[in-house]
Amino acid sequence: MNSQTIIAKLKLITVEPILFFYMMIIFMESNGLQELIFVKSCLMLNNSTNISDCSYENKINQKEAVDEAAKWSKYMNVCLSLFTFLTTFYVGSWSDRLGRKFPMLIPPIGTVIAAFINAALSFYIKTHVAYFFISSFISGITFGTVGIIATTYGYISDFTLEQSRTKRIVILESMIFIGGTVGIYVAGVFLKDAHYERELNNFVLLFIFEAVLSASIVIYTLFRIPSYTSDAQSLHRPLSCSSLFSLEHIGDSLRTIFRFREDGKRKKIILMLISLCLIYLGSVVQFTLGYYFVKGIKEMNWNFKDYSNYHAIQFGVEGFALICIFPVLYHFPRFPDQFIGILGLVSRILGLAVFGLSTNQYMIYSCIALYIFSEFPVPAIRSMLSKTVSSDEKGRIFAFTTILQNLCYMLGSFILMTVFTEFSFHGLCFEIAAGLQAIALIIIVYLYCTRRTYITAYETIEHEDGSVSEICSVVASSGSIN
Image (cartoon, rainbow, N blue to C red):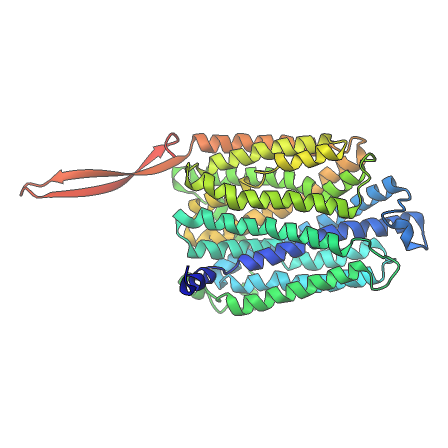
């Protein structure tokens, strides 16, 4: 491979680093906040003057502290998801109308502000845990992961042909899990043997590092991403402040979902979105309750570093499967998107069910093997959606999927965390999530059985003058042909 080929390959890298580093930040922040909320909850319950009482080694009233931390995490997730839900109806329409760059800049700028707020709350570690609502509010109104996912996936869809779009979406999706793996590991490194008694403690350093990474994303986006990726986007500029926040943007997003489409595509879009909701509800319990569930298993006695190592391995395996196994299934046997989604949902059901029943570390680690295909359904459904909507609707459809994701996180956090704290069997919430994945599996099986594929039919025609010509036509076929 010569230097020109390498340079050409490098030029293909555009929004992948943005999604990688942003998801690294999100998972790093999420895991760090879980431990910080636990520490603050422990201090509140024990009214302790010695902060080291809430360290890994001294677990006073651990059960009560875990329940208290889960409660506050639930409230903050609801706050974050609510404000994200209220604002991100705009991000998809903005990216389709104004270009991907402008809305892509907003989330990392908001993360810089939120990171400095969290750093201040870590510096003054005895402050009340409720002050975290401030950073949740900032993250929510600046779109968060919704803005990054809608704009990066929209950008990739702008530049890829339908044949190669699934491959590029899978690469982009893998950035979520590789970034998540790195973020979880980095959080574990920062918080290993954390010294809470120092004002400039490990939590402060973690959030300062987060702010630096977020600022780097802003700089990269400014210089690497073009303002417009299609002629249609440039036609809408400039917009006044009133038109920028017009309710018309919300109408655009809703019309993308509910407008009439031929061949029953509207029904299939709605079914895909319902299955995504159920999948996201399954992710809620993994993302928000996995740490508290494992911490409550007395036989394991895991600390934050132990859980970070496990979580990083799990995400690493899922990311490896996305990069290496997903493309093989897609290109060589040429399995359709629906079949790959079915494989992933079976993996999710088994992983969640066993995790909820786990009583020791061997069962916990066995879930890594069961989860290996668990992230296949989301990119498969996103690929299906991008092939169903028109070219000027991609930003809105990807934004809507992430709006649903935040709505599911808001409702799921409230419902599943209530189940977690109110029932003595803490694994019940994981079993409920496994049941929801089973419903999503039924939907995807239906879409697989009713899918329409297209074959090219060639016909040779002999004309009256003796000449011969060949014509071709595209013919729709029901489910049996891949």
